[in-house]
Image 1 (cartoon, rainbow, N blue to C red):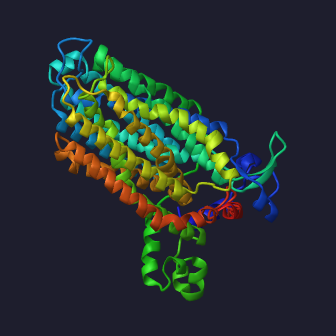
Image 2: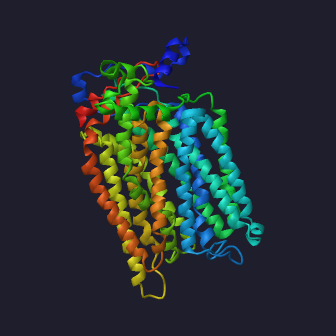
Image 3: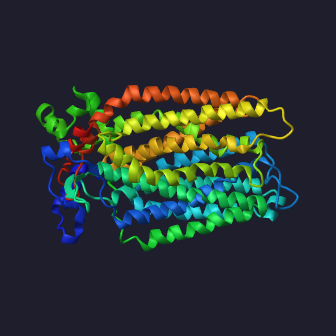
Length: 554
């Protein structure tokens, strides 16, 4: 459905009082010019439905990380004669095959969100799309668990079963990925800044920008709590076998589906808008035909210069501004494949690196859980103390600056990993060096996620048109898919003695991107809040966000 048709339909509809959310009406006065200069910015309270969506994401990520944590060992090493095992395994395909298949799984999981986004934005809506893809996901989990049984491994069913399972699971998780993060943000419906007084008597300004930052910070915290499931599943693979390691996340997926179904009446659900691709395509075509580009394609401008084209336009001025904003954000996303390439090393090559080090009585693939442990501790500290302190000091940490910091920490992680690998090669002792040397790699990676990954999710949601939230989120997730393509290209050097140079090369590439991201896009921060003001309210009137609060703090 076009934006104009949507507005016409809304204007003809008889609304009930309950059709509007309380958040639509400002609970406090609009900040004055003096307030904007003197008062600090805080986030709003989150609705209960947002926490329900976070619970759903927790269950899905518990499942995803719980099953993918043992993948490298499951593929790389042969099945041990008995359990507990010194080195768990099942297929014995070697490191290169294992890295290739885990990289393919990541690739597949981050290309399928585009399919899920199209289905959600054009046909089913986010809620029904998540429900449909959850059922598909669950079918893949059953196949993976069944073929990982001792009988399945002995009969040779593990490998073909694994291939079928990861294709189905990747399709399911991709469909959920592109829709769940926009769904959690949509639960917050307030659109304007307002002044309020805290319990301590301090007058502050509550803004949507700070609230969205808080939503995605909590959302990412839920993801990382769920990712700790890999601790349990890697212990199970070592001491019992792979079938219980996959059974646990399969069972944990069930509560997520129940929360999704039972809470369906509490979620804010925006309906699909129809053929947004067709509408955007026509807008791009018009921008090439008329002088002045997309700005000239606004119906208000077409009516003056090209009245014959104005009659054919199915969009409005707001849709043009939203699409321009989204395209600007997508240019920033072009740098993220290098970042995700750094991040993905901890799910394959760093696990293999740990297998050549002394890990005591714990499995080598448990080391990757240092990353979510650091995030679980650090994310609440940043939300409760770090960001509020910086805002109070007049440093609101705009999106591009945060993304730049994230890239820098990712580069540090890879540089340190190269140093650890050189220590392994230089070791002349009869016993391997301790895997504890890997800890800073995971800490640097966790810090990078706080600034780059969380901000990327926030940026993708805020900058997307109302009718294309899932699609723009899918494009952001697609950068992870491109990183997997780069990972495929590096499979040939993911062997000794080339691994050290691979880490070093990735580190240098990410550091170069750190500089380029800031140089090319730092000016975006000056207009961040102004661009966020583009949009429409729940009552089909133009939404107005008080972005001067943000501009004065910049």
